[in-house]
Image (tube, rainbow, N blue to C red; front, top):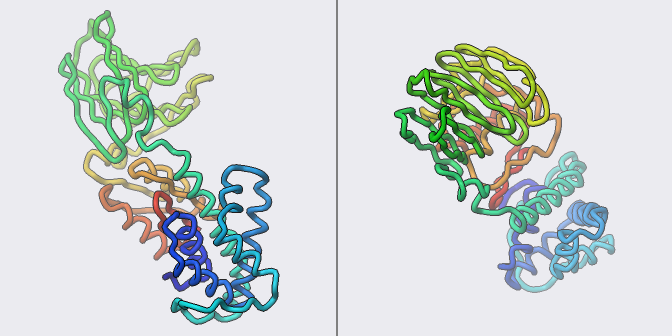
Length: 339
């Protein structure tokens, strides 16, 4: 059991909502709620938060849980009587300075639990439909290299999918999800074109990557020259070390110098960050693992992160964040919360 009051609340509520709670667990939860007025206040504030969610399905699930409802109802009394029976062992009460923060911690705890219910109930485990319809695809956390019919090589990052059409005068690739770095075989008579999100990146013989992230597409050149266009807007040319970005409903937004030392580091099993915002870092890390990572405090998003981290040990990155900043990290099934 965690030693922090907020973390304890998280663990209790998650366990009670899991469907695996026993009579002993329910008695233990009632005992925990009865330990002090601060515990009672934490549960009451969580109840207020849940009441504000209106009549959503998730709120109804929490209201229908008799174990939580009974404990919350008991908190109406300023000095709840302990339940007789099995009593769990808990850490002693924290100093009052800590207890004054317990209410906020409980609100975060309730928020975390709501998010977890939403994830467990509403996120498809198999990923985007594109993985089933594309010619080539990778699962979350997987990388692979594909040799195409013309001899070009496609290095696929996590959760990526694309289809191929070499039947016409152009070698056409349709990127449907994720990120792929293409090492293009030279063939001046058949340009190599990657289309994504309503735009395209055209080359003859070069090495460049295309990444699709929602409505945003990034094109980065490692070698050679690439022409980037988007719909009816003008074509922009980018060369080695440059990156262009476009959206599905507008022109190419900007061209900037890319960090080629960090770009494509996933091919070496690493993620490299140099003074990157924590919000951006977590967005990147989330691509490589199942479940969700939530930053609960907006102020944390602007913290700067620098380091080299192994993709197969991203928990080390989260541990580093906890050790070097004021943030804390809580791990739950399919959910990690930074607060």
